[in-house]
Length: 128
Image (tube, rainbow, N blue to C red):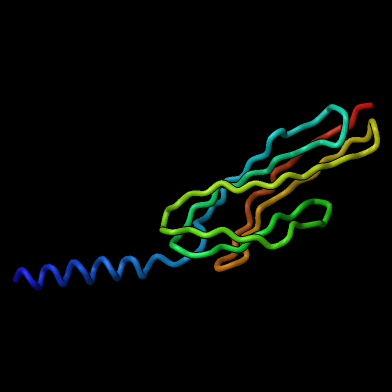
């Protein structure tokens, strides 16, 4: 009976580890600092996303912006399920003095599962 219980415990442990598939849990939390800018330009907006893993593995992602651009494909690795990581990206924006700009940036995971964060909006007016 003792050997049966040990074997049962091992089967349960290995089967639950196998169920933890790689990728990210939803939702991805996102923020930006600062949210607005009214100083000399360029403005430096630091976007950050908090990711939580579904399981061990590599996640591929990029950041998309309201101007149609996006960052190169990047990756981060997780060692276990429910591991949290914060990643960030800086967007430097400049406009002519007095011109107002409103834009957004969002995090997009592409592999092994697809997740798009909410858009984080920024506002700025460059001063002379």
